[in-house]
Amino acid sequence: MSEYAQLIIDGKEHTLPVIEGSEGEKAIDIRSLRNSTGYITFDPGFGNTGTCRSAITYMDGEKGILRYRGIPIEHLAEHSTFVETAYLLITGKLPTNDELTNTSVMLNDFSLLHENMKVFYQNYPPKAHPMGILSAMVNAMRSFYPELVDIDEELNKTFLRLISKIRTMAAMAYRISMGHQPVTPRPDYCYCANFLHMMFDSAVVPYVKDDDLVKALNVFWILHADHEQNCSTTAVRVVGSGKVNIYATISAGISALWGPLHGGANQAVINMLETIHKNGMSIEEAVARARDKQDPFRLMGFGHRVYKTYDPRGKIMKQMCDIILGKLKINDPLLDIARKLEEVALEDNYFQEKNLYPNVDFYAGIVLRAMGIPTNMFTVMFAIGRLPGWIAQWKEDLTDPEMKISRPRQIYSGNTISDYIPIHKR
Ligand code: SDX
Image (cartoon, rainbow, N blue to C red):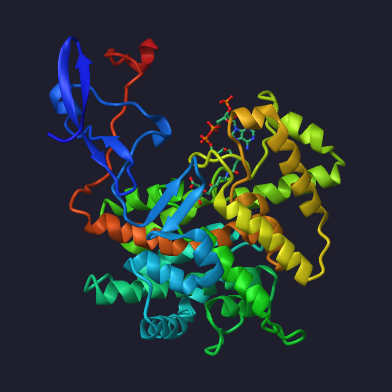
């Protein structure tokens, strides 16, 4: 027998197989545990639990490694585009020239919204959060587009329809919230340039494509495209495991991403930096408050369940700040505060002992602000980037013979058996 783990329960020895991944990660396979011992394992938040085998993304939290289908994130950020990276994540290989051209043509073909879907926007209150609109609109796509017919042909069309339309939906939510008319996508623009065009074009000030900003947006979405079994991807896999249609499944992922502990952190970071700036809080005071358990103040954009060193995406995002703000000649006081916060926190023993480093969100908001994206759209930008990863993970889960409907166990801590007491005796 290959490697195994031995468990002694009530004096009896149990042998459990060990499985090993392609990068040498090891896991104890506990699928037979309850049947052979009556015991389950206990791991709130799944911090030590592998829920699947996956060939999509590899992370090493101790070394700060992130690779999509084996390719380092640094290489993709420097050389690839978001559409090419999305193709890589979903299909498992980089596209040929023809494949990439066909993909781009289909993304353009799918970029318009059904006229009846546009009516939904009119009935949202002006201050509605675009994440709530996006989750609802993606779910509504199920009503406008047929179920999956042929898993391959239809599926790829469905994937590209989703990737294309989420961008149009997001830009439309922004335009309508500003009281502006939605902008029609341009067939001659690439995916990222079209998004910026749909966000910012106006009769008064026509959008002028800026290649540096288009490159920055490609990098931003490449950095967000997948991250193995994070909270929202787990939500996608759990919902998808019940054979829910992909639109409702992705809608669940968008909702799971919204929270400030996950994808909502980029918005929370800017709110935190603005509070520090507005209140004239010293960096030392901010760090002291973040350490204080009695104080709800947290250093948003710091810490990570997997990375116990600098998030490799955070490093690239920080470099992007210098490039974008330099290019646009923007002097953002929040960037100075962020840099000082990072410097002081990384020297602080509380953050050192707990291995708390800047994650992808710490500088992301500064980049988005510089590009003119409003704060309440930051998590929407994360969702657009993460969509190819959600799709790839949903597809892998659906086609994995080992996978079944997600149904974890629990340890019951409630009342033991008791009689019903009629209301007149209570
Ligand atoms: C994303 O999982 C992914 O891959 C997510 C993501 C992706 O691409 O999908 O990378 C995107 O969600 C990045 C994370 C964005 N969230 C934030 O920046 C919010 C601030 N960070 C924390 O809330 C926290 O670090 C989490 C949620 C990110 C991770 O939480 P864990 O793994 O459950 O760790 P924890 O909360 O148990 O913290 C461990 C200790 C605790 O102290 P003790 O109870 O041990 O004394 O570290 C402390 C925490 O209080 N801590 C912090 C802190 N983060 C953790 N203290 C101050 N400030 C912080 N930011």
